[in-house]
Length: 329
Image (cartoon, rainbow, N blue to C red; front, side, top):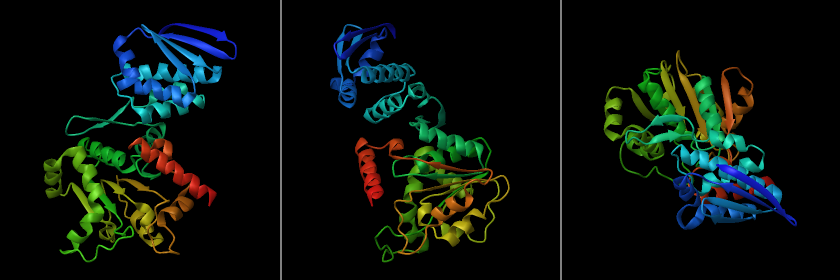
């Protein structure tokens, strides 16, 4: 980014940015200029392109926010990372809050590489805070809405720990609580009946290491995916343990799980306290654990929000709408 000029036109400001890298310039605009159109719409400004120059016209605060956002997005593009509508909106939010310098932190560090060679990176500052907490603490609670990467990032960290021999095995578990549906009529033995509950965990670990590698590790007892009830009476040493959908644990189940931790183990507990499927009047073990354990050494509690949703942009809008609805109630 070179040659930056600012001129005032009545109530508006015009700010000119020169982009020296033509490839970055093209990527910044996106297909049918959709990226630049999004910035214009979100900030209520006009953007004109003249050769390698961009002219930003609008209220000073909005123009400054747009300039900061564009500069940081170009840094991300030059690193070889992709940008999309969700990431652009997030960058605008950060710049609007005066945190433009933190935009370039997004997707800087590679957490893991999937068996297909795809790099796994944090896509929001909330996700980065979550991953850092897992690295630095023995027990981490990741609480937030669907689509914030709670389970996926925890599984990625577990796979890395296994590969680096920081853990001898991975244990993935979740409570078998029905989300408004009855699955008891399904045929098969106990394992076949609980498999539907565990499918999201299978999907996450298969994406990280591939089905064949996963099955080999299962045969060696290096990876275990099981319902929470299977954890009772065990002591889990040298393991990376993930409890998913923890909002559906009872107080007794949560205490039982937390006290399974053995030597040289790490625990990650994930959940969404807005999606509790327990019977009415039954308190969530996750809600209670956060109240009881807040402030305990070596336990981290990370709260993710709609801003950390990395699925389709509509998911972020849906989560935000529900948050507002619950806040009004």
